Length: 190
Image 1 (tube, rainbow, N blue to C red):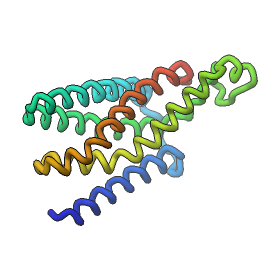
Image 2: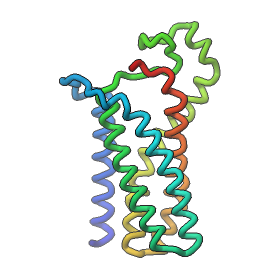
Image 3: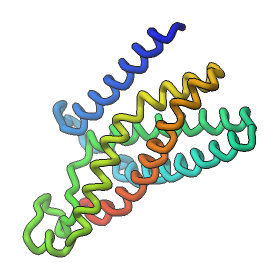
């Protein structure tokens, strides 16, 4: 495959994933079936996957620093698989689950003055982390796909150039995914 085709495939997959997330998250396609019970475990599963991916990314870095390319590849393939599983789980949860608002202590879907005051400035910290997490998660997908492809093809120099950007962003996204979960989970209404 030539570079032009790879860029087209990566662009197509990235746009498709972004649109699916937006369409299902914003409930553009309404939920027409009862929410399966397993859906309420998905945020915890997602945090576990994100935490595992964070550790695996660091393990991958360790292996490449040790020049153990075989283990570096294996760890990255597993991390890529887990991240793909995360994406499916994330989409399913956000399609079914109602929106949770940070600080909504009584779980009525609205923040009153007392709830806003109780959450205090932590709300702003949460939203900064959440917004940067969302933006970077959407933007890093094409970098991850290209990095992954270049690595599998043993295009080492191109892989290295991409990973300078994709690795820290992917690591930030996985770590902040866990932080977002820990901050919002007390307000889940299920």
